[in-house]
Image (tube, rainbow, N blue to C red):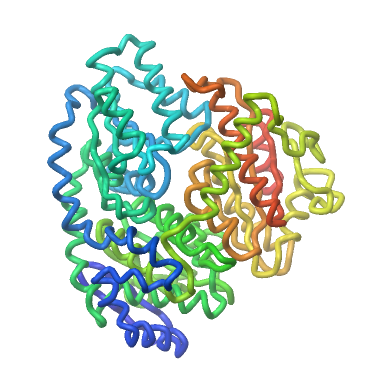
Length: 554
């Protein structure tokens, strides 16, 4: 039976409504979840989650409350500055990227510590550049480092004094260290909503103001979200409730892989934003929904499996003429970007209740941050060298393989390394590719995901899901699922040689050291949980990536 739930310009189509899914939905209705969410009932996720939920439900009102922040944009002195750089991490930055890409507007999103990528951005059109420094806590190490690098770059190009002050716009929570620093420096300050977490901040100042500064009409996004808002307070004809109950019911029934493919939605980057929201919100306590973003409905990995729920962003199965693999999709979602932001946030909160997790905390994100800080301290004061598996288990051309010997199973070349790793993936498991590289200059690395997915079907009887994430951006989102979700992942980290390092002014480390500390810190967190993790280090990035791709294509 196919069910379509539509309201406010958004529709959710469920291809198969099972008895189990209907039972989950009925329970949500009998528990009064829509009304409780509308009144911000922090008890919905249990007493332990209540303190977090009590200060993290402001996203429900953002379609109306965030409008008051938009006039602040008129106060920004951006005359002659038409290149906007967003220095920020997490879900709000991914939201801003989706907004501007969909609108066809340029926004340089720097959510990286890769020296090559940062150096290129800091050399580009500085005379026309304004930098948005975005951090809720005001202590994010990546954001602070990027602010320092750009400040030095501006000064070196002769931009100082009042001209330097107007080159930075600061977005942060009230009372944060970044607010105090920005006020001392004379930068324009925009304060965000303290009761909205980063993953749920797409429609807040953190997601909208960088987009507006870049030239997007963000009022239309708020209008789209506000059109959906009334239905989310209702027990019926509520797309958010329908989607959330479907995700939660599927996970409870063993289909805890959510495979996302765009099929004509017209929205660019929505899958990446939804991935961080779902994984970061549900992946904890050994539970979770694992989002797997694929390149399209014909891509390797978008195929029916007993542990996977296929979801199409765009077309409706059996109603919009979908053909081929898209016909297998259990769910499809249509609607404008503003409405989809609110829809997915609501659905993720509901799914968290169904599977029994707190969607508003992120304990393992902080763990990786702490590991990074400890490694940096040890490396800079000489008390602890920043080394993990210093001697590679195997060298193949420009690629070093750092891995426990039992994982390699005697492999002597890259082809056999990949086959050994894919064979070692647990049943109902997945592979996570984590690339600490330049996502502009090393963009070819994204081809590893579909190639590994296709190769896995040859190396074992059934294909395994493969995800791809750029480091360190994924640490603030899917990294939570990697360490807090089910013990079913195999982790493939990729690092690369640095030939153009960047100093971090006022700090005793460079971006190369910071990037390695983040990579090694995450490896330590994974291995401390006995989660299999391999590092491939590229002695030469271009040659190494070519070798990896050739090994998978052969």
